[in-house]
Length: 127
Figure: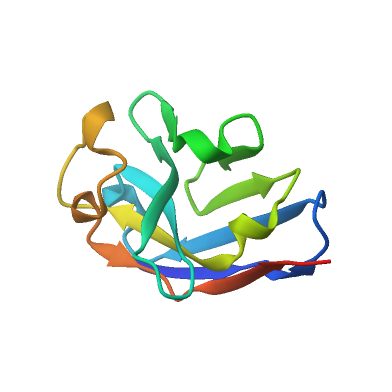
C-alpha cells in the first residue's frame, strides 16, 4: 500500500480545510486509517482514525467537534475535514494505514498500529 496526502495550506484562524489521503496498491488489506500531526519541536500526535470493519471513528479530544474523518466506499481516499481551525492546529499532517493488524478501538490512536505512512502535508493557521 502507498499513501499520498494532499490538501494542506495556509489559512486564518476559524477557517476550514480538507485533507485527503489517496491510497494505492493492495488497499483491500487496509483495516484502519488515521491522521497524525507533528508541530515544530513536538512529538507526532494522533488526530483521528477510522476503522474499516464497522466505520468506527476516533478523535483526539482537542479536535472533537471540529474535525471529521471519512472515507469513500472503495477505501481509496480518506479525508479529514477540519473546521474552526486554530493556530495550535498548525503542524505537518500525516496519513497512515494499518494493514497487518485489525485494531481495536483503544489502539486506533497509537502510531504503532499503523505500518504504512504517507508523506506529510503542511497546515499553517495564522492571522
